[in-house]
Structure formats: C-alpha cells, structure tokens
Image (cartoon, rainbow, N blue to C red; front, side, top):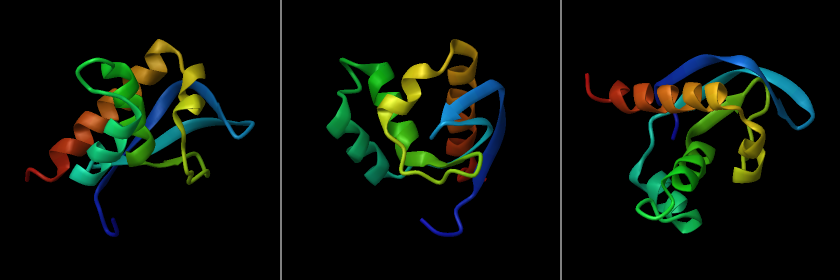
Length: 99
C-alpha cells in the first residue's frame, strides 16, 4: 500500500524489537486484506486481543528503524500502556481515510 497516510506515536517506555529498544511506532490504515490476514491468526469474536495483535502486525509500518515483517510473538513483551498506544494509533489511522 504505497503513499498511504500513517500515524506516528511514541511509546511510554522502550519495546525490544530485534534486540533493539524502540520508542516510536508508525502504523497505517488497515485494508480489508489486512483484516482477512489477521483472521487467519485469530477469530475476532473469540479471541479479540489476538486478532488485534495480528492486525497490528499487518499495519505496523515500522518500529523504530525496523520495518518488519512483524509477528504476534514480538508483541508478547508489550506492557499495558505500550499496547494502549498501539490501539490508539490504529484507531487514529482508521480515521485518516474519512476526511
């Protein structure tokens, strides 16, 4: 998805990605294809958090300088406040296409 609008957020504390501490994330708006890929990982009705993590893997443009690919296992070390920033960024990215 080229030239898509993105949201950049700062995490409240570093997240280790590939052995490096990351404090900035960039996400883009999810496409239908992203949701379909995330549904292969988890059923949104039965496993809503797992689905959201799988979707985050699809829409995460970068974590610091790391451009992925990202996998759900990388998210297991996130703390609650860090995950809240991800959710907020994803919600903001969804609204980018509404204007």
